[in-house]
Length: 305
Length: 328
Image 1 (spheres, each protein chain N blue to C red):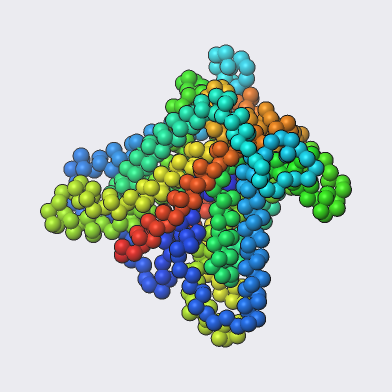
Image 2: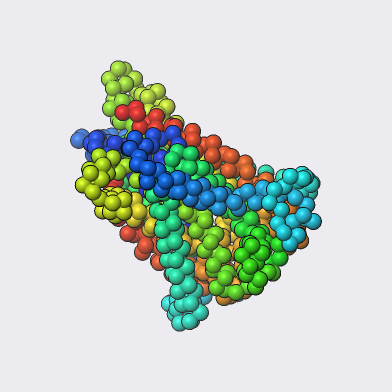
């Protein structure tokens, strides 16, 4: 999707506060301690600056227009109300878009994870002619920018009568997400040593049963990770949705929010912020939640040896 | 919606760099010839993945490429077969100084944004290694909030922050900071300040990824080496410059390259900001320009092909690195 939505897969390694900080053992001299204090303050200030837009979005969502349109900004919404949210939700368009988003994301998620899993198995567990070519193709295809192809994708879907349809948008989403998902799952499958499976086969399991009993459970974190990636990509996507879903009745949530902005800009920022908050907060909560769990899964995977 | 791919070696959990890694399991060609049904197996597994990619990416790509050598106008939309015009669409585009302006602006925007993102990202990652646990977690949460927010929601709130009448940015500049000229200042009307706002937003959104990926790499720098350098009297800057930096260079290179690729094709941010009341012709970058050509399929196809070629040139370098580091 848009350039600046980086993959969640990166979070676990780095972000996990659970990872041991290896530096802390070192002795600290007094001068260093002062510097450390200063740097700590700097880190907190940067954190506040970075988080401020998110805070501002939520805070403004609770304030009536009269309070927003004052020369002096209101920094703490102590006397806030839910009126903005009520106004956003009484207009039925939110639910319609929510349904479209849910259908597209769900369908995309199931197809992408399933297809990618099967393909990842093929390239990491089997030798076949054209295997390397396939892997290189996956790598190249994942870099194709939607912006360099969307007009043509629209034309193709239009020919087949799939514009403004959940199926049409799902096809382009799956095509966009699959290559990276295959690449990601391939890493996970390769990470489970084939010897584990072979040992089970020596013990009398068939190849298929050995796979489902031994390897598959070890792949669960990988499947979750790729599922989360697919979910965030499809749920937040704007560009392709803008091109494919031209009918206001078939908008996904990001398009719905943009519509809300265009209708209320400059007149009612409170309502716009309520809409943005409605969309963003569940995703952020999910992101923070999964980020921790996924890191736990990854660390567990590393320990298994 | 191209995937923001993550170099897999960084996605892997941190390993002890001193312990040799086991060789990855790689399928080897079977020694005896398998029966044809067994040989067919892997191909069958690839079919479900190949079909949507072929339909959703492959066919539109081929069609766009063919179309870029044809004249496809209104008459063709009503069924007239398209005429072959050779390279005319390309020469039309590339002889237009405006198109070169768009390409130049895109490259400049991309380099400035990628450079700023990398500089701030690496600086914050280093900062993270040097502060206590509480400050580090606070910074991580702040960055994760920015990272986890859907792009449209962040664009919406940034428009509100930069609102000319009641936006916080104008209030901050004019009231506490005393720059009266910013009262009621419109940020999107001038191309220069339009790009400034876009840069602030893009950098704000992209920095968390770079911070986390760099921080993970910095944690891999062995303590023993750092301590040895410290005993030898190396200053903090020297330790970073001559010890950590060379060790994390591969990660930085890939992160930087991804930033360049992502920032070159930036669309959503520019498109949404344009809708906020900017002169579109003066603010187009590659992505929005292709979008604006959407009524002329042939020209759009040619322009998109040019864009793909630029991206794939950058990508080629990235893929070569990936292939070198991964044992297929």
